[in-house]
Amino acid sequence: MILSDSAILEAIKKGEIVIEPFRRECLGSNSYDVHLGKTLLVYKTPILDARKPNPTEEIEIPPEGYVLQPGILYLGVTEEYTETHKYVPFLEGKSSVGRLGIDIHATAGKGDIGFCNTWTLEISVVQPVRIYAGMPIGQLIFFEVKGEVLVPYNKKATAKYNRKTHKPVASMMWKNKF
Image (cartoon, rainbow, N blue to C red; front, side):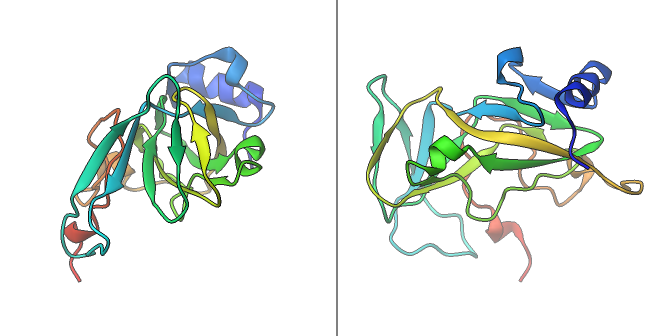
């Protein structure tokens, strides 16, 4: 079951969902709009290695915007820091963003109960497009979960993305054993 606007507000009041900064005008009937932060990361090498940390370059989006190019994976970040202690958060792109040919996540649209951080976005485009820090980029939808969560994400010993940050975070696949 997806939470409605009134249910999201009630969950925020109870501390079950945290959104910072929270802006009431960003609350939709069953979602919350999130915005693009000012920092992007791009990988510096043409071949990425899943068993090693891959070097990245940081790009700060200037006030006049930044033009994204096809064929490049950009890691972005939401302005909003979120916590979910009872509901499963899903991040989806806004239709206006999709209509510009911008995809905001390759595979990581679902968060976990206990996720407490900003969201790293896996941004790709089908043609060059200028983006701006602070633009609406996605929407969070919250789902009820059935059953007790035994180990929330922020309590997992193997959690790799739980260090609070306001910048995108590159893949840490290399921390897995394989």
